[in-house]
Length: 295
Image 1 (tube, rainbow, N blue to C red):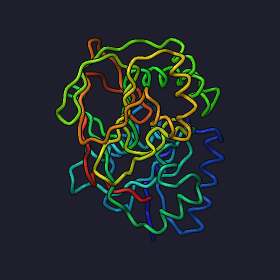
Image 2: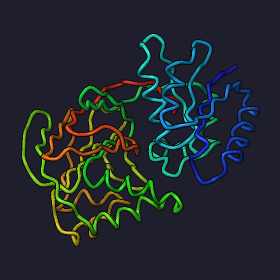
Image 3: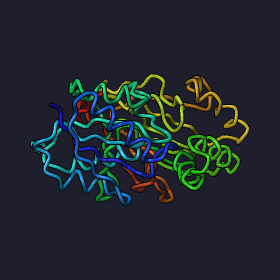
Image 4: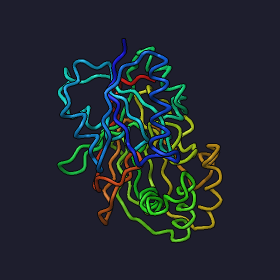
């Protein structure tokens, strides 16, 4: 019998928590999956739960929520010693679910089917060093407008998944200038940027195909660099984000790399897997086969 530690975020998603949980439990019963439920009660709670729980009797820790819940479970797992880690499984119930979309798990049926087979895969992740703090990412690490959009989107939760698109329009109109030193695989440059986003997966936010060439097991970071440009140009780029054609626009530079560093003139926050956490300067490197996931 498969046994999972189910960590559920009751504030995640459009459906009510009770409705989502009832669907999951019914599917668990169908596949004869035993579970222990832990409900998160505050930001960062999933990190604490994964760090402190005795996991030796579980086959996986299941993150039920969106990208933010998965981010916390991942960082909780990586805080454990290597011989105390177990695979992570996922059940999408958030509004973004961009990592889940990339791996083809977009509903409970898909998710529980994968959990029942219990076939973990080693996938890449990104490691971000911000001063004395280290964060791990499965999805994206964004700076500049990418962070400002997430900050505003958090205030627009009433609009569900579309809040990212609405926030994007407002931030494009503001179009703040950001001066920074950028080092990519040891090559240094200085410039003014609108935003920089490092991706491990194809999708970010709500259905934005930010990194159409990304693969989660290729040992590379897909880096999208957009230099400071006009709001008009950014508006012309924005609709292209949904089909990935923005990478052919003159405003965008698409780079594959192993590591990069952002050292801006002004300190700023980062968007890591949809969470506003950490700050610049930041150094990021890919960790090949760094984590086991059931996907």
